[in-house]
Length: 602
Image 1 (tube, one colour):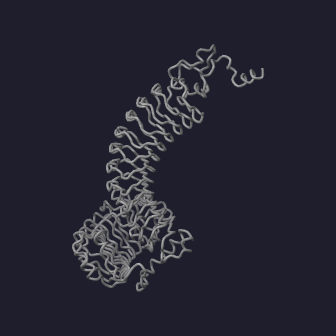
Image 2: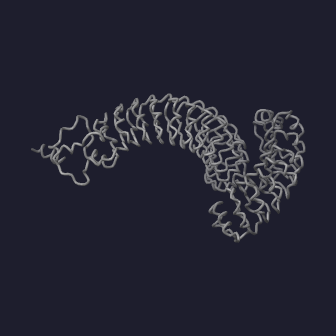
Image 3: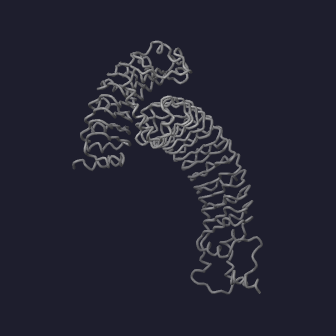
């Protein structure tokens, strides 16, 4: 009797039912609810197989129809909804039945965290399927039939045992999310290039030695994760992926970073735990949107001054490298909130300072900027690694890196033997910064057919020579911290110039020749004495994205500047004007431009 009472208490209608199938762990109440909602969640029920009546939920007449019961409005089984969402996650399934094809309306099928070793070919008949999650199983292959799912938007295959993928992968043209992480993949099908709607691609924790160059055709891709593979290089074509916002290359075997000329939207670049030795201007100069740069645990020896072009940088991780000194101008990055430097042989920064946190560190770096100018005769530190004779000419840099460097020597002139050593090698980068130069070395004109970037910062130069104006391939010119008061009109010949850094000079007016160099994308003119700008001329500079006029003598900001809609970064802090007020400046460039436009007289 007690047993009978227990049955009755558990289900008042148990006596009217046929015995449940052995092993069935799917209550009829769930099935009834699924007919109404079109959704069935059977996760975490220790199922070793899916009961047949689940596959046939939309075909069989419900059990309650055989019972002599009255139906309320809510129980009209004949008004059932086709099953669109089936969740079978976290069970003990070793296979899926081909009967899955009996659920043609499915848009979501989730069988993650089971023990599946294969998938049924009938999956290819679920033509409405949009999301398929088969992650955390034991799959060794993907059936070709899966490539017929033309409406599939999300395919999650991570944490399986896949060693190869079907060649027809590119047929999944509507795919937006693809996770293949934690498998045994050694290569990627070239048909991936056809996945032009893909937004997120995770290839981390595989055995990839290279990426196909065709991956660059994925014009919608915003996130690419290649963490923990065996990549030694990254295809240069990757740099053309204009939509890319997050790139993870951690834990590979990279020796250098690619250049990113088109990745204007890239916000995060993670390349820690590689074997990167050189970080140069070409790697950084186009990354105007970068907010996170993670390069910890590499072999980087120096940080280029151009890192200060990354005006949106919020996190910079350079821990555990071989960096001995930093550009002090790093302290001027306006958004930087986190700077990790521990584990480097830094000679100019005390260890206790590193432990005081980012803001103290940045304050210290800013304080040293002026020291670089006011204490020019201070000898650079001598290390046991560098002999004076070797430090004069670095032939490896000239021939392999195309770099002509003679910086931090406190030299009044650049020695002729340095130019003689070039011997026809196509030098692209010149770094004569942090010396005592009072003029630009005339022999720089010998490099006019190859040089693209020239750094002459932290010298005593008071005028730009005509020889510099003949470097017709020049794209980057850094001449900050000098004694310049004007620029010659002949500079108009530098038609390829994209970035110019004139900060910490003695300009009292905005150099008018800059208005005529229409290739300019970045003008850095902070810490001068500029009193006015011409917004109508600036508006003609349709490539100008960054204009830094901080700490000048602007008494007013012309409202017409608001019409310069190509500007993504406009920095005006530290000027004596009253409007826009600080609260508006703090809202960022878009808000400032909108405010200025609102002030234009009708």
